[in-house]
Image (cartoon, rainbow, N blue to C red; front, side, top):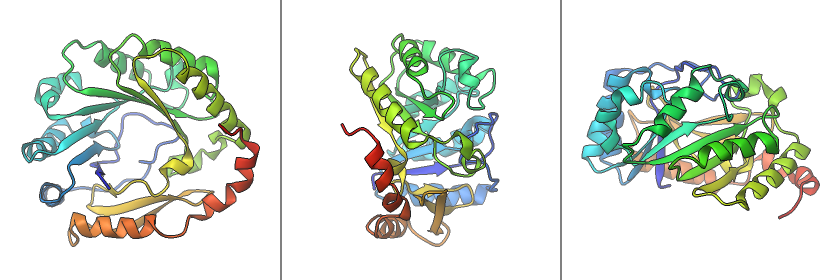
Length: 286
């Protein structure tokens, strides 16, 4: 475990069909302080700040970033771009990586998975900003609506114009709103097509790294602190992503939570892995 994801809220200005932040979990200033204290006193050096949309409450976000940065933590901010340039001067030197979403190559295609009309422009405005002091990671979630070579190729052509470090392409998973919209999940044949598409684009010339992240790559791989201080590990069991609560920051140290996470990771593989054997046989091996 070398990174912890702190989802500081679940509120968002978008309505993505695959979103894991569908539920509402309250936070309070006292809990924020306890989480900050636990993180700054832990051995963990890399911390992701995400949501929801963390810039829904920009002043709270800055109040979280500052003490973590001052303690030498390497911060990764995951945002849909809302308000980012308005608070750029207060954030720019304190984050190492900026994560931005892009599900399409123009305003219309970027709305295909539920993002709002302004989302594409917000991302492009940030990419056009010439005072960048951090690395940029672009994330694209693939549903059966945008799982095709033409769409991904056109996104790659957009990214080729900018100083992007990594483009990570994620398979949609059935977590929270993703479970409600499970008709958008990829079939085994869809997954094979996605593998081929990404491989083809990877073989082209780009200045950034391209990674494909499938469902099984994400199961058990995250230790997430929720807005109320509870800690969860998402496990893919086939039909849904099950969020296993392993403790609470108010009565556990980060090190104790990491030990609990390790016990889950080292446990027998989930039912999803066993059930995926037949699916793998239908996919193209690389």
